[in-house]
Length: 478
Image 1 (cartoon, rainbow, N blue to C red):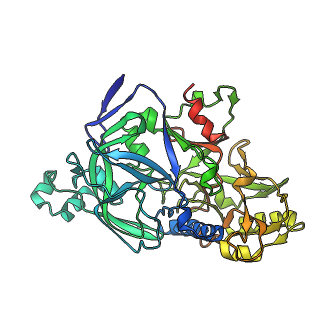
Image 2 (cartoon, rainbow, N blue to C red):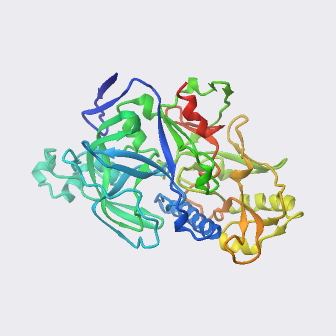
Image 3 (cartoon, one colour):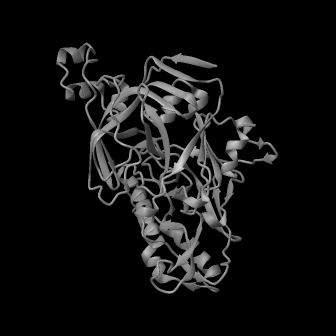
């Protein structure tokens, strides 16, 4: 049996209706956008992915979020408009706050080197309506510009602006810049339907007809009025204010992924601790507000352990200052974890001290992958355990070996001798001066594999728990 809930959302939406089953929790599938045909060798894959991670991280210090290219992201699928509507697949991104998608006719400039789009450009349905210039949604898309300015840009007459009578004038197109691309989009409202029969009326999204190097749209899950969780929570707080995902471990091999990664909307805190015979302990740390980048999910990092040695993090990673500098962003869109130079060097030196004594350094692989240190080994490489220590009592997250040490066969392409090689999957984000005005570090999705990561937007905290992610599908059925 279904129920309809109608709430007036004074800040952003009006006359919003949600149709959903009586369940307080919804599971949705996240699909990893593997693109083996787009990469010729593991070296090419790692080089491209590490370059994208670095670009996304560094461009954040220019106040622009950056989604990754295909081969590194998780996608969420849904439909827009009255049925029958085609399925749309977008990248899930907790580091941005807008939902946008390619619309027909669509042109992507400089997309020749990109993987093909995940779904065809959207043809707006008859039920789609343009967002008016006077709405707060329009203001949110234009970095909080006053509605009077936006309506003037939309050529609404002065007397109509003064009397707030510009409903017939649509919101002007907005520009959204990314690290390796950009887009211009218009705001529309239409019904959004997710798997499991969740339908959200008057959902606001960006419709882009022209992009630069961005062939795939983004479902923004960060803080912000236009993000998907914010729009969902406006009519169903129990679903939108608390969500989690559990990324199935893949090591860039689609053959290892038998089931999609679960995205859980309305994650119930009371039901976290036990599923069947599995007792789960979550490690929580508080979110930090970033005044310059308010859509980020930032946390404080106390240090990193390599084996039994604890390496303290610099002070700027433990907090965010009023300029928006510092903290660690927990991000679903960045692949590899980025650390400031001083912390990265200390971690690498300790790691190399323990591993480099027994294994030959693979310098050529480091040059072709953008990662390091890398080592050749015979059968099994012994590596130390790496743990992250977040701000909070006992907030320690022990990473599985596969989350920070990537192993593959060098020379499998027939070029050179075949040798086993492994690389540390952490990256140098730059020195403290370069990172001023933005996050000090980023926790990438590769290091989040095999963990359920909970985002509690009401209590402003993030939790981590080791899970068998694929088994969550069965746990929620029980």
